[in-house]
Structure formats: structure tokens, C-alpha cells
Amino acid sequence: MRERLSGIAAFVQAVEAGSFAQAAERMQMTRSAVGKSIARLEERLGVRLFHRTTRRQSLTEDGQAILEGLNPMFSRLASLQCPTVAAVQGAALGVGLGLALACDLLVVAESAKIGSPFAAIGAVLDSGSHHFLCSRIGPARTLELVYTGRFLSGAEAVEWGIANQVHPDDELLGAARALVAAIAAGPTAAFLLSKDLVARIAGGGLSLDDVLAAEAAGQGAASRTHDYGEGITAFQEKRKPTFTGH
Image 1 (cartoon, one colour):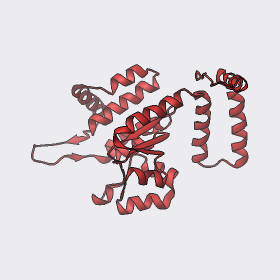
Image 2 (cartoon, rainbow, N blue to C red; image 1 turned 90 degrees about the vertical axis):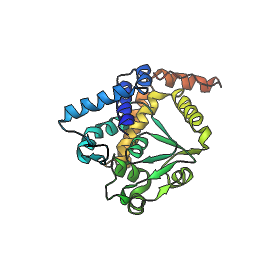
Image 3 (cartoon, rainbow, N blue to C red; image 1 turned 180 degrees about the vertical axis):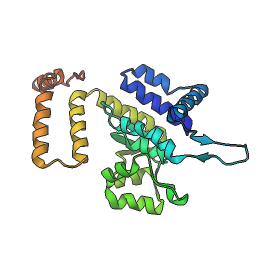
Image 4 (cartoon, helix red, strand yellow; image 1 turned 135 degrees about the vertical axis):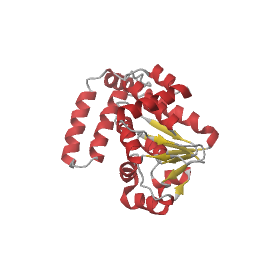
């Protein structure tokens, strides 16, 4: 788990810096580099996150320290200024679930397992999943997953409204990439205006009048982009638009 989390944290940092090539490279971090990242995190926090005194003793964790060190990653992933898509094959539980739900869209394989395993170990659902699940499926169904420890299949996750699409396992990555490519080819500047507005609505406190005003402001901002002019021109010329994200 530590290896994946360190790699994802480095990936988020690279995306925030605008270096997508570096982000791809970061996802291929070596075991040695991962170990050094964990050591730096522990040094910065001033605590040991993982302890094992002998090979025969079980691993113990300082759960609060781990989450305090990792929590900023979930917030930063959720607020990245670009559309984000997560693809889940197999189990997404705990931190894995938080990472998946922090993305704008979620596509899953038929073999996916989505839920909270913590009822079996006396722990608390974490990684922002209370917030993310409540936003997607409401309080009652969120607590149903917490109380029962039920794992949803990929198809059930879509039926419940947690995931957007389900695909056969061997088609998942291709489907996710196709979705990302379609989004990237669209008017991404306008998409970000909608992403921001949706986040504000989900956060509560916006009346219908507030939303209408925000939509009007967003439309005004979009109308000053190249993509807006291209979209209108392409519509008039009855051709497919070529968006640039500007």
C-alpha cells in the first residue's frame, strides 16, 4: 500500500506542476525511490508511520499520523484543475476507495469491489470516503455500506450511483482511455468552469439564483475563449469542432 500511495502522491504533484510526462514517469517509481519518499514523509511529520520490530510480529500503524500525512493528497486530487477519471479493477477499499472517489468520474470493471471493510476490524472509514459517498449516494446508503461492510460489484456500484460505467475486465482500460480522450478533445476550459460550479453546489449554500448567476458568469467567461468561437463556427458550418482547451 505504501508503494502505491507514494507513487500516487508524486503523480499528483507532477500533474499540479503541469508536467504530464513527469507524472507518467513518477508512476513508475522504483522500490528504492518509494522507500525514500516514505522516509521523507516520516521525517517531515516527525513520527514513524509503520513499525515492525521482528519478522514474526504483526505490522502496527499510527492510523491518525498516516492519515494526517496522506489527507492533503485526497484534497489536492479532488481539486485538480483538470477533468479526472479513475478506473478500478478489483478491490477499491479504504485508501483505494478514497482515491477513486476523489476523481470526477469513475469507471469500474465487473470484478470491482467497492465498499467499506472497516466494520470487520473495528476501524473507521477514511480517506474522505464519508464525504465522497454522501455526495454521490446520500447519507442512508453511505451508512448502509459502513454498517454492513457490504462490497458492491462493478455493476452494483453503477446501479447505486457510485460509479459511472462498468465494463468487462479486459475492456476496462481501453474504455477508460477512450473516455479520457473524448474529454480531452472537448472544450476543457468550459469543463473546468462546470467542475468548479458543481463542486460549489455539492458543498451546499448555493440557492437557485446563485447557480443561475454563476452559470451566467461562466458562460461569459467561456464566450471569451477560442473554443467557444470554434464551437459556434463549427456548428454553423455543420462540421465537428476542433477544441484546444483555450
